[in-house]
Every structure is written in structure tokens, then in C-alpha cells.
Image (cartoon, rainbow, N blue to C red; front, side, top):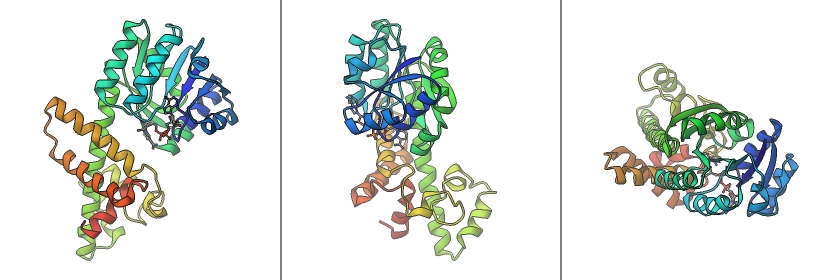
Length: 292
Ligand code: NAD
């Protein structure tokens, strides 16, 4: 299929390369010329402009920083792409913007889905992302084969915006379990418990979670976790703060009671303000150890 890929940053570059590997013809556009050059090195065709990328496309895939970029890009895509093109936004953005852009797309005769991802840069490169898809049944059926080339799981979460809703709820839960895991290790240290011993017990007991068993925030028990490489991401604290901000906006709009989500947001806000935005989100361990 002819696919326009817009936004070839940390995530989009690996995703576009996997579409190329799956024998799609990818036309790459990014405001950053270096990002386009990297995509071309991976087998994509350089597009000189957004219009150049979208002309005659069978699908348009976007992987952009935030809601305002998604609004701006699609306002232009609607005027350029053939209405037969399937529109797939993989960026993490707020639910209301996703719904508004998708409603606009439908009004203009396009099928569109929101398809944010779980998994970081390594999963984008390896083609093992999990996609949470919001949109019509028909949109999902059309998007599934395209997304499968970039991921290991593609799940239909519901109507427009449901992918974004699932993403921010999941990441709020992830932040809370990570902070809880850091607190448990912090208390275990003060009580003289060995990290590995506490890990061996908690990972087989009711304190078990992904934050503990796959992403342990202290060095040692899980060799692949960022704690073993000076907390290089992985998933940067700044991105966790972004997702928690989206979750708190959604909680305010829907009047959902999320006291632990609010506390997690405040803690990640403080961690980033202390200069640790670029470190992995499990660096929360150091803040909890310091007590501030
Ligand atoms: P990034 O900043 O590395 O890449 C975004 C790219 O979009 C940049 O290359 C930028 O030049 C380009 N861009 C911005 N505006 C544009 C426009 N108008 N036209 C064309 N290109 C434009 O960001 P990223 O880390 O790749 O993240 C992308 C999205 O994925 C974000 O929404 C992020 O929250 C989400 N996400 C990131 C991760 C991660 O680990 N990095 C994990 C899951 C989800």
C-alpha cells in the first residue's frame, strides 16, 4: 500500500522502517530534514511536503508530539489526501482532540482511527508495539493490517478517542504502580531487606506488578531494566508527565476521582522540575530514596 508517514522522530522512524520491511511503499515527511533522511536510509521515499506525502496515499499514518500538531497536520491532510485514504493517528494526545479531529475526518468523507501505542523506542524499532485503537468497526478492520506490521498486538478499544482513553488510563496505572514499587523498595532498604530477596518474595506474592517484574526500579533483579544503566530511557520521565497531564485533564473534565493519579502527577512534575525529565521514569526511585 502507498502510505504517507508524517512525524519520523524517536518512535516514527522505527515504525516507518517496519512498514517498509512489510513491503509497503512509504512516503516520509517531517519538518526535520534529518528525520526524513533517516527514513530514506531505511527505505522510505522522501516527500518534499505534506502534500507530496499524502497525494494518492492509501493510508496516512501520523506520529506527532501533541494535540496541536495533530490538529494542524490533519487540517491540511483533509484538503490533500484522497478521501479513500485511511487516516491513522498513532500520537498520544488528549481524548477530546482525538474525537474532534476524527469527527472532522468523518464529515469530510474519511475513515479515521486513533491508535496510540504502548512500548517505547525499542518496541517501535523491533515492531513489537501494542496499539490501542479507537474508531469504527470498519476503520479498525482497515487499520489492523497496517498496524500489525509495526506491532505485536492491535486491540479495538471502542469508538473515536477510545484508544487515547485506554492509553492514558493504562499509563496512570503504570505511574502509580511504579511509585508504589519505589516506595516498597525504599522502605525495604530502611528495614535492612536485600533487594533481590525482597524482589523474589514480592514478585511471587500479591505485590507483583509489571513495574516490579519487568521494569524493576533498583539495579540487579531485572537485568534489562533501566535501573541497570543509570536510568537511561526506556520511557522518559517527561513522557510520563505528559501522559499524566492528559489523564488529569480527562479526570477533571469527566469528574473522575483520581487522588493517586493526582499525586503521581505532582511527583513526576517535581522530578522533571529537578532536572530529571530526560531520565527513565523509574528514576523516581532516587527521589523517593532522598525523600524529596
Ligand atoms: P519526537 O519528538 O521524537 O518525534 C516527533 C516528530 O514529529 C519530530 O521529528 C518532529 O519534527 C515531527 N513533527 C512535529 N510537527 C510536525 C509537523 N507539523 N509536520 C511534520 N512533522 C512534524 O517524539 P516521539 O518520542 O517520537 O513521540 C511521538 C508520539 O509518540 C508522542 O505523542 C509521544 O507521546 C508518543 N509516545 C512516545 C513514546 C516514546 O517512548 N518516545 C512511547 C509511547 C508513545
